[in-house]
Length: 106
Image 1 (cartoon, helix red, strand yellow):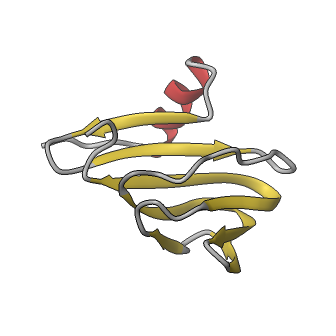
Image 2: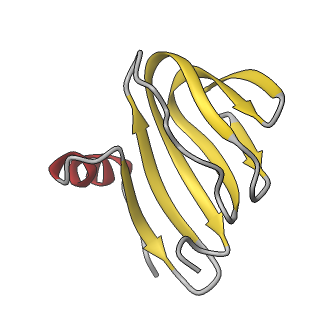
């Protein structure tokens, strides 16, 4: 069994000075923690994998393809492979659990 705690993941992400921390990488899935602070720009590019974003905390808008909505704690956003997506108008520090399938780098 692999078990993760958000506070520990956040501490590890901060220690590595990055906006993204991949903490699980298995044969069919990878999962990471993505952090954007209020007012920060999201510079992600379209992914080669399908992506599920689960907003753990914070508030922002997100645009996937041509559709835009507001997200906050508990929101889940699916992004099909190859579709442009970005968080914007981040009004509260955003922490997002990002699930890739197949895993990143495959």
